Image 1 (cartoon, one colour):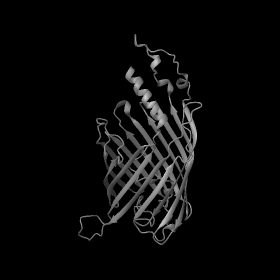
Image 2: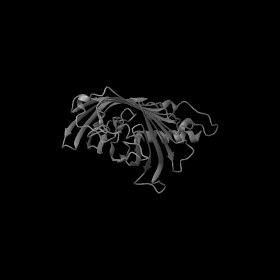
Image 3: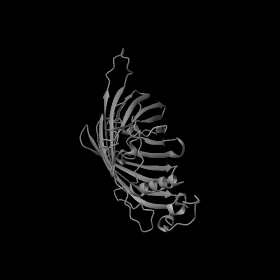
Image 4: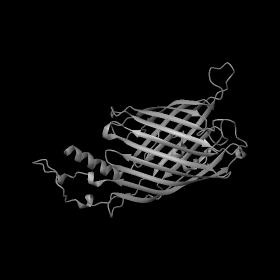
Length: 343
């Protein structure tokens, strides 16, 4: 029982102090999870959803879902909507947000363009404080649990908080290369569950990019025509926490397969691991749909947790070819390959 108390308090304080954002392994496939500047990047109506199940073994399960819908409504302006839900089974903590997204495209040259993006909306965090077990509720002599506590500042907290949240980002891209920067929680909303608390949500920095190498195939080549190799990376930092995902993906017109490596480059603790997980990724294109799957194999001491599974589905439809001028058949000019048009 005492162990349950310690775990509950530790997790509770972690939520108040750190409030880390959920992240996705398949960031390159659904760039809307990283940066609002990618709103409308598919040059068509595009919708998608990604489901992330982390540590599905027992009460450690964490589920995160992200969905989006967007389009490039003019040659320069993209509009969209994103919804995210995050739930932790072992704490009954839930984080929900819905945001409107906007992007504006500036042509810098015949090869490069600048995408400016903004995102804003409603956030809600829920935590069931009735599940918390405080030390003075335990009778150490009999092991029984009492109903009262001398800490009403905890038990009398609200179970949920609502807040306004804002994000901004930009990206430079060309036919084969892209690099972007985004910062979430620019307004530092107060996420304290205490009535008179003040816990600003830490800003989340993401620096991401990629480059495509196209294969010049001959008719006798074993590599399918139109194949390419993507090198991509995503550096993320929130408060003292940091992560760098880096890897490569081999892509054809119908199938892609690759691997990403999740690293902890700063290793702030003596027991920290530089390589925290190895993440194979694959996706398949069927008509207007793209199906993706990835699995994170943990390489740290936190083992026997069944890793992390991600399932994604993207639907690109109603492509307006009046805006297809200066676009290659396989890659959109300026699209950088982070979402293929698939023909």
